[in-house]
Length: 174
Image 1: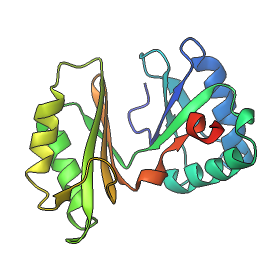
Image 2: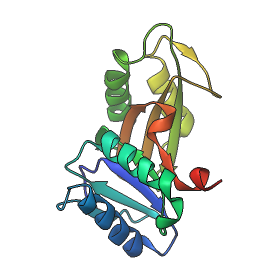
Image 3: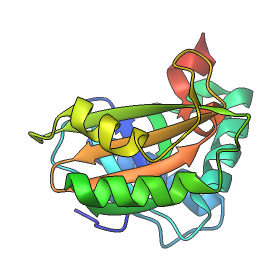
Image 4: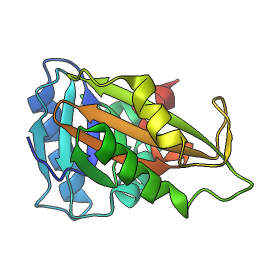
C-alpha cells in the first residue's frame, strides 16, 4: 500500500480496481496523470496519492459531482489527508495536535472523528490522546472543524478539515 497517500476513497466492496480506474480518469482530467491508487487491504477502501492539493482536488470533484453525481459509478466518498503516520497512539496524538494547534481558533468548535480498520487501537484512547491538547469547545453535531483520523492497519491518515472538505457522492445524490 502507498505509505504517503493523501486521499482515502471508499468504494463498492469488490470494485476497488474499477474505483481506481475511475479515480485515474477523474484525476488525469484535472491534470494529474501521475496519480497513484492502490488497494489498502480493506474491502471497499483505496489509497490515493495525487500531486494536486488534495483539498483542491476534492473541491473540483465536488463541483463535477454536483453537476452529475451519477458519473461517479464506483467511488463513494473522498477524504483528504494531510499526514500519514504509523498507527501508534503517540504518533497520531503528536501529528493531530500539531495540525490543530494553530488552525482551530479560540472561538471555534471541533469534533474528533476516528474511523478504524484492521487495528486493535481503541477509538476512545485515540480521541482522549488528541483532545487533551485542544482547549476548545466540542460540538459533535455541527463543528467548525473536524479532526479526521483514518486508521488503516499499520498506517493512519490525519487531517484537520472543515465538514464540507469531505466529498460524499451518496449525500449529493439525495
